[in-house]
Structures are given as structure tokens and as C-alpha cells.
Amino acid sequence: MSPRTLSFVLRSRASIFKPRQPQLLHRVSCPNPGQTRSYAPNHSSSSSFPPPSQNDLLNTKLRTLINAIPPSQKIRYVKDSSPSSTTHPTASPSLLSALLNPSPPPYTIGTDICHIPRILLLLQRQLAELGYVEGEMPRFWTRVLTPLEARYSGWNSGGGVEGRARFIAGRWAVKEAVIKAVAAAYPGGGKVFMHDIVILNAKVQSALLEAHKAAARIEAREGGGAAREEMLGGEGEGEVKGGAPRAFVKVPGGEGWVEVSVSISHDGEYATATALVPVDQKIAAGLRREKSLVRGVVAKTYTDARYL
Image 1: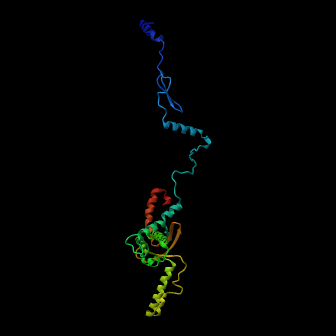
Image 2: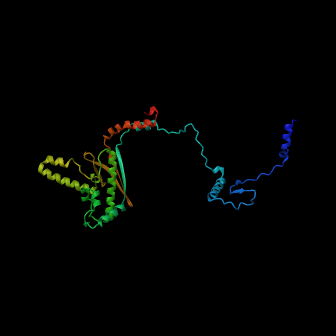
Image 3: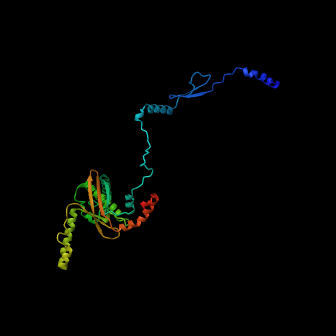
């Protein structure tokens, strides 16, 4: 052994045989389901640390409840690995064919519902105005009904305000239904208003037909037999069939009046109505013009060429 090595060993002998000093125990956090305690070397209790928060207690109770549920009753998500499942559903070729080749329906449907107490409150408010004259029709009445309808509506025939509100609520609902159906049957046309629609019940129809026959008889005496036959029409024409009301709407664009099928129902505090309007055949041309636009939208969504 060289003198240099021996000197190094002698100098380090004290550190080699010196007993190891105990390490200080630092603060350790030991969480458990109930709370979190901290231990220090010179403390025998944890009273100096704050209690667990309310959120910690709620989380603990929630974990306890979840762990108490049997595994057989737990709902688990299982991904469908069948080959038929797809991430992007596609439409069938027949559906796309119907979309790309639209055909106009023969009729359009409109429906509406009216709350009768709301109409009653409106009528009572207008009847209580200072400028109202007893026996006259209120503004809302003449707003909904045409002069022809208002003449035969029976405002002064009795029934009270409740009966009048029930009647005008049905007329409001049926005219709103007709407006919706006409807007779908004549797209791009002018707007239809309340006075463009006439609802005639059986009593009004009979009165109008009797007036028409009286005018025809007068015209026949002045113009001869040819005029009489032209005014009265064929045999059986002009008879009122059934008691259902008939509706007529003035078609946008000045194309005359068209009869539409309507149905009015009252149930409790509500009046409902449905209208069936025949579709104008000129709509088909407009739908064909829109075909190219629809094709472009479909082409961006479905890239398969067989659908186009």
C-alpha cells in the first residue's frame, strides 16, 4: 500500500465508523375515505388541522353509494362493433330520388286554433269603450268578417257576448287556416287577408241563392227566355246541399275565387279549424326550376355518384 493511499484511509476512518444520525421525519399526507391527516415528528394529534370541506364529504358519500351498487346493476357502455354500424348514416336511393324529383301534392293543408276567452275579453273591451254605439258591430267583428258575412252573421240575433265570441273565434281560426293553406298552394303569390276569404253557412247560402233567383226572374222578364235560362242555369243548379259551411278564397294574382274545403270544431275554450286548398298546377314548373338547387345541396352531402 502506498503512503498516499494509507493516509487517505486513516483520514476517512472516523467518517466510516461514525454512527448514522437519525433523519428528521417530514410532514406526510395520508388521505383516507373520511379525511386527510398530516403527521409531524413533534405532534401527537391532528386537532390543529382544518376539518374536511363540504365538497369532500359529498364526494365521499357519493363514492360510498356508487360502491354499494352491485356490478350487475351498473349500466356500462359497450361499443357496437358489428359491421353494419356506420358513423355517417346515408339516405336510401329511393329517398334521394324523391328529393331530386319533387312532385307537387294535389292539396295543401292549413290548421289553426283560437282561444275563445281571449276573443271574449277583446269583444268586452271594445263594447265598453266610450265611443261605442249600442247595436253596432265592434271593430274586431268587422275586421274578421267581410261586409257580406257581417250582414248575415246575426250580431243582433241574440246569444249574448259569449255566443258571439264563440262564433267569431271559429271564423278567425278557419280564416287563418285558409291563409296558411293558400300560402303553401300559391308560393310567391300575393298575401291573402281576412277580407279575401268568405265563409258562408247554409242559411247564408240559401239567402244568396234566393236573391240570385229573384234577380234572374227580373232579368228574364226584361231580356226574354234566353236570358232567363242563362241566369237560372240548368236543372238542380243552385241547391244548398247539407248544412256545412262553404269557404271561398280570392286567389292571389286576380285569378278569381276558389272554393276550399274547411272544417270548424269547438271544444271547451278552444275553436279549431282545418282548410284543404287545391294546388295550382303551375307550381310544378317552379319545383322543376328548384331541382338544380336541390341537386347541388345533395351533391355536397352525398358524394356517391349513383345518388346523383
